[in-house]
Amino acid sequence: MIEIKNIKKIFGERTILEDISAVMEAGKCNLIIGTSGSGKTVLTKCMVGLFRPEIGEILYDGTDMLLMNNDERKLLRQQIGMLFQGTALFDSMTVEQNVLFPLDMFTNWSLAEKKKRVNEVLDRVNLKDAHKRYPSEISGGMKKRVGIARAIVLNPKYLFCDEPNSGLDPQTSMVIDRLIKEITVEYNITTIVVTHDMNSVMEIGDHIVYLHQGRKQWEGTNKDIIFSKDELLNKFIFASEFLQDAKEMRMMEANAANKKNG
Ligand SMILES: Nc1ncnc2c1ncn2[C@@H]1O[C@H](COP(=O)(O)OP(=O)(O)O)[C@@H](O)[C@H]1O
Ligand SMILES: [Mg+2]
Image 1 (cartoon, protein in one colour):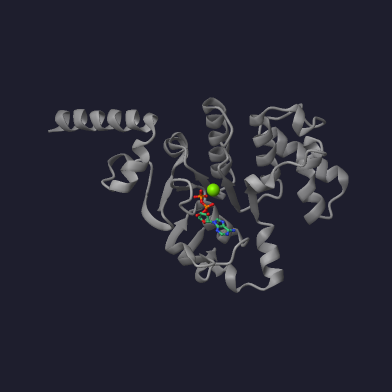
Image 2 (cartoon, rainbow, N blue to C red):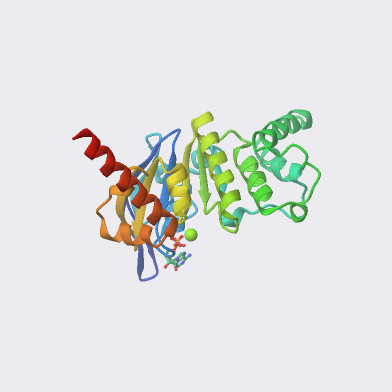
Protein backbone atom coordinates (compact mmCIF):
# COMPACT_ATOMS: atom_id res chain seq x y z
CA MET A 1 0.00 0.00 0.00
CA ILE A 2 1.15 3.51 -0.75
CA GLU A 3 -0.26 6.49 1.04
CA ILE A 4 0.42 10.04 -0.09
CA LYS A 5 -0.34 12.96 2.18
CA ASN A 6 -0.71 16.65 1.37
CA ILE A 7 1.62 16.60 -1.63
CA LYS A 8 2.61 19.99 -2.95
CA LYS A 9 4.94 20.40 -5.91
CA ILE A 10 6.19 23.68 -7.28
CA PHE A 11 8.18 24.30 -10.46
CA GLY A 12 9.61 27.82 -10.50
CA GLU A 13 6.73 30.11 -9.68
CA ARG A 14 4.04 27.60 -10.60
CA THR A 15 2.28 25.32 -8.16
CA ILE A 16 1.79 22.09 -10.13
CA LEU A 17 0.34 19.92 -7.35
CA GLU A 18 -1.58 21.24 -4.34
CA ASP A 19 -2.48 19.29 -1.21
CA ILE A 20 -2.98 15.86 -2.76
CA SER A 21 -3.73 12.98 -0.42
CA ALA A 22 -4.71 9.49 -1.54
CA VAL A 23 -4.24 5.81 -0.84
CA MET A 24 -3.05 3.28 -3.43
CA GLU A 25 -4.18 -0.18 -2.46
CA ALA A 26 -2.34 -3.50 -2.83
CA GLY A 27 -3.69 -6.02 -5.33
CA LYS A 28 -5.62 -3.29 -7.09
CA CYS A 29 -5.30 -1.12 -10.15
CA ASN A 30 -5.18 2.40 -8.77
CA LEU A 31 -5.80 4.85 -11.58
CA ILE A 32 -4.74 8.46 -11.79
CA ILE A 33 -6.88 10.19 -14.38
CA GLY A 34 -7.34 13.72 -15.65
CA THR A 35 -6.89 15.87 -18.73
CA SER A 36 -3.50 16.56 -20.24
CA GLY A 37 -1.48 18.87 -18.00
CA SER A 38 -3.47 18.14 -14.83
CA GLY A 39 -0.36 16.82 -13.05
CA LYS A 40 -0.65 13.04 -13.40
CA THR A 41 2.93 12.44 -14.51
CA VAL A 42 4.41 14.90 -12.03
CA LEU A 43 2.50 13.18 -9.20
CA THR A 44 3.69 9.72 -10.23
CA LYS A 45 7.25 10.98 -10.59
CA CYS A 46 7.02 12.35 -7.06
CA MET A 47 5.75 8.98 -5.89
CA VAL A 48 8.68 7.05 -7.36
CA GLY A 49 11.24 9.59 -6.17
CA LEU A 50 12.14 11.19 -9.49
CA PHE A 51 10.78 14.55 -8.25
CA ARG A 52 10.84 15.76 -4.68
CA PRO A 53 7.66 17.48 -3.50
CA GLU A 54 7.98 20.71 -1.49
CA ILE A 55 5.50 19.47 1.10
CA GLY A 56 4.00 16.08 1.90
CA GLU A 57 4.58 12.46 2.78
CA ILE A 58 4.89 9.41 0.53
CA LEU A 59 4.41 6.35 2.69
CA TYR A 60 5.40 2.97 1.30
CA ASP A 61 3.80 0.46 3.64
CA GLY A 62 4.02 3.05 6.37
CA THR A 63 7.54 4.38 5.77
CA ASP A 64 8.02 7.85 4.31
CA MET A 65 10.19 7.63 1.21
CA LEU A 66 11.12 11.29 1.59
CA LEU A 67 12.78 10.56 4.92
CA MET A 68 14.76 7.52 3.73
CA ASN A 69 18.53 7.65 3.34
CA ASN A 70 20.14 6.77 0.01
CA ASP A 71 20.57 3.08 0.78
CA GLU A 72 16.98 2.71 1.96
CA ARG A 73 15.71 4.54 -1.10
CA LYS A 74 17.82 2.32 -3.37
CA LEU A 75 16.28 -0.79 -1.81
CA LEU A 76 12.81 0.63 -2.26
CA ARG A 77 13.51 1.47 -5.92
CA GLN A 78 14.23 -2.21 -6.54
CA GLN A 79 10.71 -3.03 -5.39
CA ILE A 80 9.21 -0.60 -7.87
CA GLY A 81 8.51 -1.68 -11.45
CA MET A 82 8.07 1.11 -13.96
CA LEU A 83 6.51 1.31 -17.37
CA PHE A 84 7.09 4.96 -18.20
CA GLN A 85 7.29 6.69 -21.54
CA GLY A 86 10.84 7.62 -20.61
CA THR A 87 11.78 4.04 -19.82
CA ALA A 88 11.32 2.74 -23.34
CA LEU A 89 13.07 -0.39 -24.57
CA PHE A 90 16.71 -0.32 -25.59
CA ASP A 91 16.62 -0.54 -29.39
CA SER A 92 20.08 -2.08 -29.66
CA MET A 93 19.17 -4.97 -27.36
CA THR A 94 17.04 -8.01 -28.09
CA VAL A 95 13.81 -8.63 -26.20
CA GLU A 96 15.63 -11.09 -23.96
CA GLN A 97 18.48 -8.66 -23.26
CA ASN A 98 16.01 -5.91 -22.43
CA VAL A 99 14.28 -8.03 -19.81
CA LEU A 100 17.59 -9.34 -18.50
CA PHE A 101 18.88 -5.83 -17.92
CA PRO A 102 17.38 -5.21 -14.43
CA LEU A 103 18.62 -8.64 -13.31
CA ASP A 104 22.14 -7.74 -14.45
CA MET A 105 21.86 -4.46 -12.58
CA PHE A 106 20.38 -5.64 -9.31
CA THR A 107 21.15 -9.34 -8.79
CA ASN A 108 24.25 -11.52 -8.78
CA TRP A 109 22.40 -14.53 -10.12
CA SER A 110 24.05 -16.89 -12.60
CA LEU A 111 23.24 -16.41 -16.27
CA ALA A 112 21.19 -19.62 -16.21
CA GLU A 113 19.09 -18.34 -13.29
CA LYS A 114 18.60 -15.01 -14.98
CA LYS A 115 17.54 -16.62 -18.25
CA LYS A 116 15.08 -18.84 -16.41
CA ARG A 117 13.47 -15.79 -14.80
CA VAL A 118 13.37 -13.98 -18.16
CA ASN A 119 11.58 -16.97 -19.68
CA GLU A 120 9.07 -16.98 -16.84
CA VAL A 121 8.10 -13.34 -17.24
CA LEU A 122 8.07 -13.43 -21.04
CA ASP A 123 5.78 -16.46 -20.79
CA ARG A 124 3.61 -14.56 -18.33
CA VAL A 125 3.05 -11.73 -20.82
CA ASN A 126 2.40 -14.28 -23.58
CA LEU A 127 5.59 -13.64 -25.52
CA LYS A 128 7.15 -17.01 -26.10
CA ASP A 129 8.94 -16.68 -29.41
CA ALA A 130 10.27 -13.15 -29.38
CA HIS A 131 13.45 -13.58 -27.30
CA LYS A 132 15.91 -12.94 -30.10
CA ARG A 133 14.02 -10.17 -31.84
CA TYR A 134 14.81 -6.48 -31.64
CA PRO A 135 12.24 -3.84 -30.64
CA SER A 136 12.12 -2.54 -34.22
CA GLU A 137 10.99 -6.00 -35.35
CA ILE A 138 7.94 -6.33 -33.10
CA SER A 139 4.54 -4.60 -32.90
CA GLY A 140 3.60 -1.78 -30.51
CA GLY A 141 1.53 -4.15 -28.39
CA MET A 142 4.42 -6.60 -28.16
CA LYS A 143 6.76 -3.79 -27.10
CA LYS A 144 4.41 -2.93 -24.24
CA ARG A 145 4.43 -6.58 -23.19
CA VAL A 146 8.21 -6.59 -23.15
CA GLY A 147 8.05 -3.38 -21.09
CA ILE A 148 5.70 -5.08 -18.63
CA ALA A 149 7.91 -8.17 -18.50
CA ARG A 150 10.90 -5.98 -17.73
CA ALA A 151 8.94 -4.02 -15.13
CA ILE A 152 7.97 -7.19 -13.22
CA VAL A 153 11.17 -9.20 -13.66
CA LEU A 154 12.44 -8.25 -10.19
CA ASN A 155 9.10 -9.27 -8.67
CA PRO A 156 8.11 -5.74 -7.59
CA LYS A 157 5.67 -4.88 -4.83
CA TYR A 158 4.72 -1.70 -6.65
CA LEU A 159 4.12 -1.12 -10.35
CA PHE A 160 3.79 2.27 -12.04
CA CYS A 161 2.50 2.56 -15.61
CA ASP A 162 2.27 6.01 -17.18
CA GLU A 163 -0.11 5.96 -20.14
CA PRO A 164 0.54 2.29 -20.96
CA ASN A 165 -1.89 2.48 -23.89
CA SER A 166 -0.43 5.45 -25.67
CA GLY A 167 -0.06 4.67 -29.36
CA LEU A 168 -2.04 1.43 -29.21
CA ASP A 169 -5.30 0.62 -30.98
CA PRO A 170 -8.35 0.06 -28.73
CA GLN A 171 -8.22 -3.72 -28.94
CA THR A 172 -4.52 -3.98 -28.10
CA SER A 173 -5.06 -1.42 -25.33
CA MET A 174 -7.64 -3.69 -23.77
CA VAL A 175 -5.30 -6.68 -23.92
CA ILE A 176 -2.57 -4.66 -22.20
CA ASP A 177 -5.01 -3.31 -19.58
CA ARG A 178 -6.21 -6.81 -18.77
CA LEU A 179 -2.66 -8.08 -18.52
CA ILE A 180 -1.75 -5.32 -16.07
CA LYS A 181 -4.85 -6.12 -14.05
CA GLU A 182 -4.19 -9.88 -14.00
CA ILE A 183 -0.61 -9.42 -12.91
CA THR A 184 -1.69 -6.97 -10.20
CA VAL A 185 -4.12 -9.46 -8.68
CA GLU A 186 -1.91 -12.51 -9.19
CA TYR A 187 1.15 -11.05 -7.45
CA ASN A 188 -0.77 -8.71 -5.11
CA ILE A 189 1.05 -5.67 -6.50
CA THR A 190 0.14 -2.10 -5.64
CA THR A 191 -0.33 -0.88 -9.20
CA ILE A 192 -0.69 2.72 -10.29
CA VAL A 193 -1.84 3.37 -13.84
CA VAL A 194 -1.89 6.88 -15.25
CA THR A 195 -4.40 7.25 -18.04
CA HIS A 196 -6.85 9.56 -19.74
CA ASP A 197 -8.45 6.62 -21.52
CA MET A 198 -12.00 6.08 -20.26
CA ASN A 199 -12.05 2.56 -21.66
CA SER A 200 -9.24 1.72 -19.24
CA VAL A 201 -11.13 3.38 -16.40
CA MET A 202 -14.14 1.14 -16.95
CA GLU A 203 -12.05 -1.97 -17.61
CA ILE A 204 -9.56 -1.88 -14.72
CA GLY A 205 -10.40 1.10 -12.47
CA ASP A 206 -10.59 -0.47 -9.01
CA HIS A 207 -9.72 2.80 -7.38
CA ILE A 208 -9.60 6.08 -9.23
CA VAL A 209 -8.06 9.43 -8.34
CA TYR A 210 -9.20 12.23 -10.61
CA LEU A 211 -6.90 15.24 -10.85
CA HIS A 212 -8.00 18.63 -12.04
CA GLN A 213 -5.45 21.44 -12.34
CA GLY A 214 -3.11 19.84 -9.85
CA ARG A 215 -5.72 19.10 -7.19
CA LYS A 216 -7.56 15.92 -6.32
CA GLN A 217 -11.05 16.64 -7.54
CA TRP A 218 -12.67 13.24 -7.00
CA GLU A 219 -11.86 9.73 -5.78
CA GLY A 220 -13.84 6.50 -6.10
CA THR A 221 -14.33 3.26 -8.03
CA ASN A 222 -15.36 2.73 -11.63
CA LYS A 223 -18.80 1.85 -10.34
CA ASP A 224 -19.10 5.14 -8.46
CA ILE A 225 -17.92 7.14 -11.44
CA ILE A 226 -21.07 6.36 -13.39
CA PHE A 227 -23.26 8.06 -10.82
CA SER A 228 -20.89 10.81 -9.79
CA LYS A 229 -22.41 14.27 -9.56
CA ASP A 230 -19.05 16.02 -9.74
CA GLU A 231 -19.41 18.49 -12.58
CA LEU A 232 -15.77 18.62 -13.60
CA LEU A 233 -15.49 14.84 -13.55
CA ASN A 234 -18.62 14.52 -15.64
CA LYS A 235 -17.28 17.00 -18.13
CA PHE A 236 -14.09 14.99 -18.33
CA ILE A 237 -15.80 11.64 -18.82
CA PHE A 238 -18.46 12.92 -21.16
CA ALA A 239 -15.70 14.00 -23.48
CA SER A 240 -15.43 10.28 -24.18
CA GLU A 241 -18.19 8.95 -26.41
CA PHE A 242 -17.66 5.43 -25.19
CA LEU A 243 -18.33 6.37 -21.62
CA GLN A 244 -21.32 8.45 -22.56
CA ASP A 245 -22.84 5.25 -23.95
CA ALA A 246 -21.73 3.18 -20.97
CA LYS A 247 -23.04 5.73 -18.52
CA GLU A 248 -26.42 5.96 -20.23
CA MET A 249 -26.70 2.20 -20.38
CA ARG A 250 -25.91 1.75 -16.69
CA MET A 251 -28.34 4.52 -15.76
CA MET A 252 -31.03 2.78 -17.79
CA GLU A 253 -30.22 -0.56 -16.18
CA ALA A 254 -30.31 1.00 -12.72
CA ASN A 255 -33.63 2.69 -13.44
CA ALA A 256 -35.07 -0.56 -14.77
CA ALA A 257 -33.85 -2.41 -11.66
CA ASN A 258 -35.34 0.28 -9.39
CA LYS A 259 -38.71 0.00 -11.11
CA LYS A 260 -38.65 -3.77 -10.80
CA ASN A 261 -37.76 -3.60 -7.11
CA GLY A 262 -40.14 -0.92 -6.12
N1 LIG B 1 10.04 19.39 -15.25
C1 LIG B 1 9.07 20.32 -15.30
N2 LIG B 1 9.34 21.62 -15.10
C2 LIG B 1 8.37 22.57 -15.11
N3 LIG B 1 7.06 22.31 -15.33
C3 LIG B 1 6.72 21.02 -15.54
C4 LIG B 1 7.69 19.97 -15.53
N4 LIG B 1 7.05 18.80 -15.75
C5 LIG B 1 5.75 19.13 -15.90
N5 LIG B 1 5.55 20.45 -15.77
C6 LIG B 1 4.24 21.14 -15.83
O1 LIG B 1 3.40 20.54 -14.86
C7 LIG B 1 2.06 20.46 -15.33
C8 LIG B 1 1.57 19.04 -15.20
O2 LIG B 1 2.30 18.22 -16.10
P1 LIG B 1 2.11 16.64 -16.20
O3 LIG B 1 2.15 16.05 -14.86
O4 LIG B 1 3.11 16.17 -17.19
O5 LIG B 1 0.64 16.53 -16.80
P2 LIG B 1 -0.14 15.21 -17.26
O6 LIG B 1 0.75 14.03 -17.07
O7 LIG B 1 -1.38 15.17 -16.42
O8 LIG B 1 -0.49 15.45 -18.69
C9 LIG B 1 2.09 20.96 -16.77
O9 LIG B 1 1.63 22.26 -16.78
C10 LIG B 1 3.54 20.91 -17.15
O10 LIG B 1 3.87 21.90 -18.07
MG1 LIG C 1 1.57 12.63 -18.41
